[in-house]
Amino acid sequence: MAEENRTLWIRDPLDCADRGAAGGVVVDGTRILEKVPAGGRPSRPPQEIIDASSHVLLPGLVNTHHHFYQTLTRAYSPALNKELFPWLTTLYDVWAHLDEEQLALASELAMVELLMSGCTTVADHHYVFSGALEGAIDRQVETAQRLGVRAALTRGSMSVGRDEGGLPPQSVVQDEQTIVDDSQRLIRRYHQRGDGAMVTIALAPCSPFSVSRELMRESAHLAQAEDVRLHTHLAETEDETAYCQELFGMRPLDYLEDSGWLSNRTWLAHGIHFNDDEIARLGRAGTGIAHCPSSNMVLGSGLCRTLELEAAGAPVGLAVDGSASADHSNLAEEMRQAMLLGRLRYSPSQVTHEAVIRWATQGSARCLGREDIGGLEPGQQADLALFKLDELRFSGAENPLAALLLCGASRADRVMVAGRWRVTDGLPCDLDLDQLMARHDSAARRLRNAL
Image (cartoon, rainbow, N blue to C red; front, side):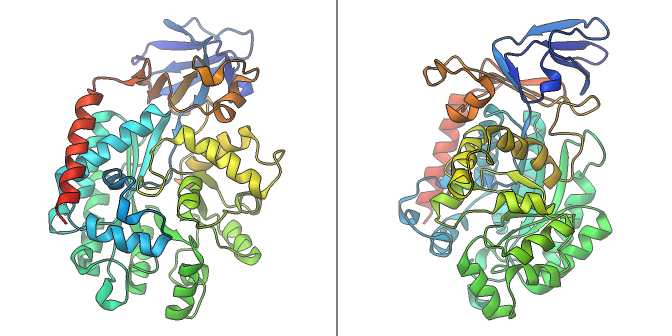
């Protein structure tokens, strides 16, 4: 563990995402003090050295979109083999029975799974609130603090239920004032600012088909007044486009702009069905896109135009999305999916392993409005992921960095968050995984049996 005023040299990694740190990095407290070039040594002797010659070194991966609670409904038979809208209507009736104990267990398991995959910043979009879930975000904050992960938590919401033509049941719909009041409470209680923030809060109405226009606009006003970020699902399917055109008389991005959301304060989940003009507008605004390749494939939603978005100026990050569509919370595996799916639209020379690692680190950090994470530059946070290539799948690999994606890395050997080791020897520190899985599985069965 890197302690305050005690420098640690992570020395001579087998390979590194940053060629300027081929000789490793020096950590001082919570920050990176120095990058060491290949064959070099730190400018000052460190107090501690870790031999990283069997590890590939990456900045900590940054996840930009998830639904932690959905780990309780993975591979759920009634929802299998469906597109987004029927998939949602099937599962909403299950999720309406969530309680805080189930949500806390689901959040813990999702965060641990992400952490073990090399992810140091976990983002979640929680929008299911019933009488039994009023303190959902509070429970997530507590869990993130106990695990020591960096968390970007979004106060989601749904205000338009089936009675008003929306998709969710009325039992999880809240009135606008309740949503705004709780959003303001969470921001003022938990949102941290500046470099090194461990918990941030954003405002995240679920989607155009589950909230009112008034709530979208009020969320934009509150986000500006409190200086926090905005997040929602947008342009995920053609059904959503048709819905917006029928209900609002405009396409999803026009609706977003009309609601005051088209800015660099916003990042969007999926962002698949944009035309050329819309991509240019997103780029000019600096609006980010959380690319969710596995979920997009499972639900047959389409192919995100990642390279055009990035070229236009829109930050592109990577996300696992909810575990009821992607069915995992593993950002290392998601990198491989992003590379393979990207090569169906673009050439292999364009969607390289380096490009995808950039999406999962620097691009994701930009989506979250962070400059202090996602890289290995001096002064940035000491968030690091170290992978070993000691499994059968890696045997014979010549390029260690490329092997992480091409051969399918799924578990980091060591993970550091803010200068503290949170995963060692492939396992989370101070946590009984078997006990967590048993409690989580019991909660999942109890949720299913509530129907």
